[in-house]
Length: 264
Ligand code: KIV
Image (cartoon, rainbow, N blue to C red; front, side, top):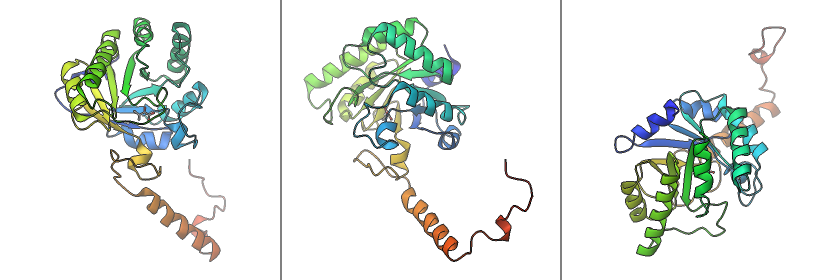
Protein backbone atom coordinates (compact mmCIF):
# COMPACT_ATOMS: atom_id res chain seq x y z
CA UNK A 1 0.00 0.00 0.00
CA UNK A 2 1.12 3.54 -0.83
CA UNK A 3 2.95 5.12 2.16
CA UNK A 4 0.80 8.27 1.96
CA UNK A 5 -2.37 6.16 2.29
CA UNK A 6 -0.88 4.26 5.25
CA UNK A 7 -0.24 7.59 6.96
CA UNK A 8 -3.86 8.65 6.42
CA UNK A 9 -5.11 5.36 7.90
CA UNK A 10 -2.89 5.82 10.96
CA UNK A 11 -4.60 9.10 11.77
CA UNK A 12 -7.90 7.40 12.67
CA UNK A 13 -8.65 8.09 16.36
CA UNK A 14 -5.38 10.02 16.67
CA UNK A 15 -5.47 13.26 14.73
CA UNK A 16 -7.92 14.90 12.35
CA UNK A 17 -7.40 14.54 8.61
CA UNK A 18 -7.42 17.84 6.77
CA UNK A 19 -8.54 17.90 3.13
CA UNK A 20 -9.42 20.49 0.50
CA UNK A 21 -10.12 20.54 -3.22
CA UNK A 22 -7.80 21.93 -5.88
CA UNK A 23 -8.17 22.29 -9.63
CA UNK A 24 -4.87 23.98 -10.45
CA UNK A 25 -1.18 24.07 -9.57
CA UNK A 26 -0.96 27.45 -7.84
CA UNK A 27 -3.68 26.65 -5.30
CA UNK A 28 -2.45 23.06 -4.85
CA UNK A 29 1.05 24.31 -4.04
CA UNK A 30 -0.29 26.41 -1.15
CA UNK A 31 -2.53 23.63 0.19
CA UNK A 32 0.16 20.97 -0.05
CA UNK A 33 2.27 22.60 2.66
CA UNK A 34 -0.48 22.31 5.25
CA UNK A 35 -3.05 19.61 4.56
CA UNK A 36 -3.22 15.81 4.27
CA UNK A 37 -5.39 15.22 1.21
CA UNK A 38 -5.84 17.26 -1.96
CA UNK A 39 -8.92 16.24 -3.95
CA UNK A 40 -9.38 17.10 -7.59
CA UNK A 41 -13.15 17.15 -7.21
CA UNK A 42 -15.74 16.98 -9.94
CA UNK A 43 -17.15 20.02 -8.13
CA UNK A 44 -15.00 21.81 -10.71
CA UNK A 45 -18.08 21.43 -12.94
CA UNK A 46 -20.01 23.95 -10.84
CA UNK A 47 -17.15 25.96 -9.39
CA UNK A 48 -14.97 26.43 -12.50
CA UNK A 49 -17.14 25.65 -15.48
CA UNK A 50 -20.40 27.13 -14.21
CA UNK A 51 -22.50 24.01 -14.89
CA UNK A 52 -25.63 23.50 -12.82
CA UNK A 53 -24.49 20.03 -11.74
CA UNK A 54 -21.37 17.86 -11.88
CA UNK A 55 -22.55 15.67 -14.75
CA UNK A 56 -20.98 17.38 -17.74
CA UNK A 57 -17.40 17.05 -16.53
CA UNK A 58 -15.60 14.25 -18.33
CA UNK A 59 -12.48 12.21 -17.72
CA UNK A 60 -10.36 14.42 -19.97
CA UNK A 61 -11.33 17.56 -17.98
CA UNK A 62 -10.42 15.78 -14.74
CA UNK A 63 -7.11 14.55 -16.16
CA UNK A 64 -6.12 18.01 -17.44
CA UNK A 65 -6.80 19.65 -14.07
CA UNK A 66 -5.05 16.85 -12.18
CA UNK A 67 -1.94 17.28 -14.34
CA UNK A 68 -1.89 20.90 -13.23
CA UNK A 69 -2.61 20.10 -9.55
CA UNK A 70 0.05 17.37 -9.50
CA UNK A 71 2.70 19.99 -10.21
CA UNK A 72 1.86 21.65 -6.89
CA UNK A 73 1.55 18.50 -4.78
CA UNK A 74 4.44 16.62 -3.27
CA UNK A 75 3.58 15.85 0.34
CA UNK A 76 -0.21 15.37 0.41
CA UNK A 77 -2.24 12.44 -0.80
CA UNK A 78 -3.62 13.30 -4.23
CA UNK A 79 -7.11 11.89 -4.81
CA UNK A 80 -9.02 12.27 -8.08
CA UNK A 81 -12.78 12.18 -8.48
CA UNK A 82 -14.01 9.79 -11.16
CA UNK A 83 -16.67 11.68 -13.13
CA UNK A 84 -20.21 10.44 -13.67
CA UNK A 85 -20.38 7.65 -16.19
CA UNK A 86 -16.69 6.78 -15.96
CA UNK A 87 -17.14 3.74 -13.68
CA UNK A 88 -20.45 2.24 -14.76
CA UNK A 89 -19.15 -1.30 -15.18
CA UNK A 90 -16.00 -3.29 -14.33
CA UNK A 91 -14.32 -2.85 -17.69
CA UNK A 92 -14.98 0.90 -18.00
CA UNK A 93 -14.06 1.53 -14.36
CA UNK A 94 -10.76 -0.32 -14.64
CA UNK A 95 -9.81 1.25 -17.97
CA UNK A 96 -10.61 4.78 -16.81
CA UNK A 97 -9.13 4.50 -13.32
CA UNK A 98 -5.90 3.06 -14.71
CA UNK A 99 -5.77 5.81 -17.32
CA UNK A 100 -6.19 8.54 -14.68
CA UNK A 101 -3.50 7.01 -12.45
CA UNK A 102 -1.08 6.35 -15.30
CA UNK A 103 -1.33 9.83 -16.81
CA UNK A 104 -1.59 11.92 -13.64
CA UNK A 105 0.38 9.79 -11.15
CA UNK A 106 -2.28 10.52 -8.53
CA UNK A 107 -2.41 8.32 -5.42
CA UNK A 108 -6.06 7.29 -5.42
CA UNK A 109 -9.45 7.79 -7.02
CA UNK A 110 -12.83 8.65 -5.48
CA UNK A 111 -16.08 6.99 -6.44
CA UNK A 112 -19.55 8.13 -5.40
CA UNK A 113 -21.83 5.42 -4.07
CA UNK A 114 -25.11 4.69 -5.81
CA UNK A 115 -25.81 1.91 -3.28
CA UNK A 116 -25.09 -0.66 -6.00
CA UNK A 117 -21.48 -0.14 -7.04
CA UNK A 118 -19.74 -1.96 -4.13
CA UNK A 119 -18.60 -4.70 -6.51
CA UNK A 120 -16.97 -2.07 -8.75
CA UNK A 121 -14.98 -0.78 -5.76
CA UNK A 122 -14.03 -4.35 -4.79
CA UNK A 123 -12.92 -5.07 -8.36
CA UNK A 124 -10.79 -1.89 -8.55
CA UNK A 125 -9.18 -2.54 -5.17
CA UNK A 126 -8.33 -6.10 -6.29
CA UNK A 127 -6.62 -4.50 -9.29
CA UNK A 128 -4.55 -2.49 -6.77
CA UNK A 129 -6.34 0.78 -7.39
CA UNK A 130 -6.82 2.68 -4.11
CA UNK A 131 -10.41 3.89 -3.78
CA UNK A 132 -12.03 6.50 -1.56
CA UNK A 133 -15.80 6.05 -1.18
CA UNK A 134 -18.44 8.78 -0.93
CA UNK A 135 -21.91 8.50 0.62
CA UNK A 136 -24.74 10.80 1.69
CA UNK A 137 -25.33 13.62 -0.74
CA UNK A 138 -23.71 12.26 -3.89
CA UNK A 139 -24.30 14.89 -6.61
CA UNK A 140 -23.67 12.43 -9.46
CA UNK A 141 -26.68 10.35 -8.45
CA UNK A 142 -29.00 12.63 -6.43
CA UNK A 143 -30.89 15.58 -7.79
CA UNK A 144 -32.17 16.99 -4.54
CA UNK A 145 -29.97 18.19 -1.75
CA UNK A 146 -31.11 16.84 1.61
CA UNK A 147 -29.49 16.15 4.98
CA UNK A 148 -29.33 12.37 5.28
CA UNK A 149 -29.55 10.19 8.38
CA UNK A 150 -32.29 12.04 10.19
CA UNK A 151 -34.06 9.00 11.60
CA UNK A 152 -33.12 5.52 12.79
CA UNK A 153 -33.97 3.73 9.58
CA UNK A 154 -32.01 6.22 7.42
CA UNK A 155 -29.04 6.03 9.80
CA UNK A 156 -29.01 2.23 9.65
CA UNK A 157 -29.15 2.28 5.85
CA UNK A 158 -26.22 4.71 5.71
CA UNK A 159 -24.23 2.59 8.16
CA UNK A 160 -24.86 -0.51 6.05
CA UNK A 161 -23.78 1.35 2.91
CA UNK A 162 -20.60 2.61 4.60
CA UNK A 163 -19.76 -0.87 5.89
CA UNK A 164 -20.21 -2.41 2.45
CA UNK A 165 -17.84 0.21 1.02
CA UNK A 166 -15.31 -0.57 3.74
CA UNK A 167 -15.68 -4.31 3.08
CA UNK A 168 -15.17 -3.65 -0.63
CA UNK A 169 -11.71 -2.34 0.30
CA UNK A 170 -12.01 1.45 0.18
CA UNK A 171 -9.31 3.12 2.28
CA UNK A 172 -11.52 6.00 3.43
CA UNK A 173 -14.96 7.45 2.84
CA UNK A 174 -16.45 10.91 2.37
CA UNK A 175 -19.62 11.56 4.36
CA UNK A 176 -21.46 14.40 2.67
CA UNK A 177 -24.31 16.18 4.44
CA UNK A 178 -25.10 13.57 7.06
CA UNK A 179 -26.70 14.34 10.42
CA UNK A 180 -24.21 14.52 13.25
CA UNK A 181 -25.74 11.32 14.74
CA UNK A 182 -25.21 9.39 11.53
CA UNK A 183 -21.65 10.71 11.14
CA UNK A 184 -20.81 9.79 14.72
CA UNK A 185 -22.17 6.26 14.47
CA UNK A 186 -20.54 5.53 11.11
CA UNK A 187 -17.19 6.98 12.23
CA UNK A 188 -17.24 4.84 15.37
CA UNK A 189 -18.19 1.64 13.53
CA UNK A 190 -15.73 1.86 10.63
CA UNK A 191 -12.05 1.05 10.77
CA UNK A 192 -11.31 3.32 7.81
CA UNK A 193 -11.28 7.11 8.26
CA UNK A 194 -14.37 9.16 7.49
CA UNK A 195 -13.95 12.58 5.88
CA UNK A 196 -16.90 14.86 6.51
CA UNK A 197 -18.37 17.71 4.52
CA UNK A 198 -21.47 19.21 6.09
CA UNK A 199 -21.50 16.24 8.47
CA UNK A 200 -20.42 17.81 11.78
CA UNK A 201 -17.16 17.37 13.65
CA UNK A 202 -18.01 13.69 14.34
CA UNK A 203 -15.77 12.54 11.49
CA UNK A 204 -12.10 11.57 11.31
CA UNK A 205 -11.41 14.49 9.02
CA UNK A 206 -12.95 17.34 7.09
CA UNK A 207 -13.05 18.48 3.48
CA UNK A 208 -14.32 21.69 1.93
CA UNK A 209 -14.32 23.06 -1.59
CA UNK A 210 -11.42 25.52 -1.48
CA UNK A 211 -13.17 28.21 -3.54
CA UNK A 212 -16.05 28.14 -1.02
CA UNK A 213 -13.86 28.56 2.06
CA UNK A 214 -11.89 31.32 0.33
CA UNK A 215 -15.12 33.16 -0.47
CA UNK A 216 -14.79 33.24 -4.25
CA UNK A 217 -17.35 30.66 -5.39
CA UNK A 218 -20.56 32.48 -4.47
CA UNK A 219 -21.84 29.21 -2.96
CA UNK A 220 -22.01 29.31 0.79
CA UNK A 221 -24.34 26.77 2.38
CA UNK A 222 -24.47 26.68 6.18
CA UNK A 223 -21.73 24.06 6.48
CA UNK A 224 -19.20 26.27 4.69
CA UNK A 225 -17.14 28.64 6.74
CA UNK A 226 -15.66 31.50 4.75
CA UNK A 227 -12.13 31.83 6.14
CA UNK A 228 -11.51 34.90 4.03
CA UNK A 229 -13.49 37.11 1.68
CA UNK A 230 -10.99 36.69 -1.13
CA UNK A 231 -13.45 38.09 -3.67
CA UNK A 232 -13.15 41.50 -1.97
CA UNK A 233 -9.36 41.34 -1.85
CA UNK A 234 -9.15 40.42 -5.54
CA UNK A 235 -11.61 43.17 -6.42
CA UNK A 236 -9.55 45.72 -4.51
CA UNK A 237 -6.43 44.74 -6.44
CA UNK A 238 -8.24 44.79 -9.79
CA UNK A 239 -9.68 48.25 -9.05
CA UNK A 240 -6.25 49.59 -8.12
CA UNK A 241 -4.72 48.13 -11.29
CA UNK A 242 -7.52 49.61 -13.41
CA UNK A 243 -7.05 53.03 -11.85
CA UNK A 244 -3.30 52.94 -12.30
CA UNK A 245 -3.48 51.87 -15.94
CA UNK A 246 -5.94 54.66 -16.69
CA UNK A 247 -3.87 57.25 -14.85
CA UNK A 248 -0.70 55.90 -16.47
CA UNK A 249 0.75 55.08 -13.07
CA UNK A 250 1.34 51.52 -14.23
CA UNK A 251 3.62 50.40 -15.73
CA UNK A 252 6.39 52.58 -14.37
CA UNK A 253 10.03 52.39 -15.38
CA UNK A 254 10.44 49.69 -12.73
CA UNK A 255 8.25 47.42 -14.87
CA UNK A 256 9.94 48.14 -18.20
CA UNK A 257 12.00 45.28 -19.52
CA UNK A 258 14.64 47.09 -21.52
CA UNK A 259 16.41 43.88 -22.31
CA UNK A 260 16.88 42.87 -18.67
CA UNK A 261 16.36 39.27 -17.61
CA UNK A 262 12.76 38.03 -17.78
CA UNK A 263 11.30 36.33 -14.66
CA UNK A 264 11.39 32.56 -15.00
O1 KIV B 1 -16.23 17.12 -5.95
C1 KIV B 1 -15.92 17.46 -4.81
O2 KIV B 1 -15.36 18.54 -4.57
C2 KIV B 1 -16.25 16.55 -3.73
C3 KIV B 1 -16.12 17.05 -2.33
C4 KIV B 1 -17.20 17.99 -2.04
C5 KIV B 1 -16.06 15.94 -1.35
O3 KIV B 1 -16.62 15.46 -3.98
